[in-house]
Length: 131
Image (tube, rainbow, N blue to C red; front, side, top):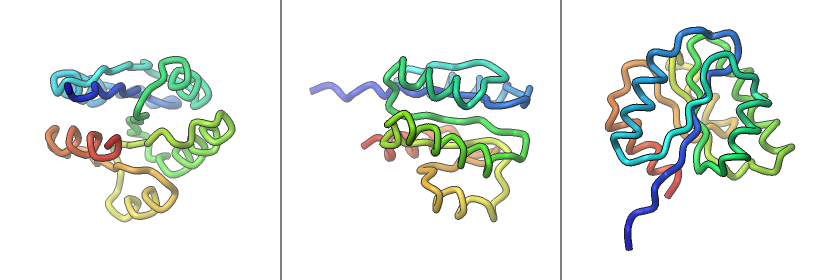
């Protein structure tokens, strides 16, 4: 039986205008055999959740360079619960200080990939949260 193709939505929430890393990671995920939906820059969390519902994704990935990862992730998880999609795993990457990783995981973020994380670790981490 062929391996299931993972469908991941990569979102850039808020006013963060730096998306080079998100695009490079999206390409690496695609090259690893995943189907990637990239929302583009300056999306609201409501738009990201709506896209996740519409596309029936397996994973939501956020790229956050603004330093607002804690409130953004809290709000995203709240919106996902309202929409009934709280079972979709969420991963986050970008500028994530090491001390914040534990707090993100405690709130329910299933994968945290700070800048500089090797692509093979990101791919393996996403596969692990979908399994």
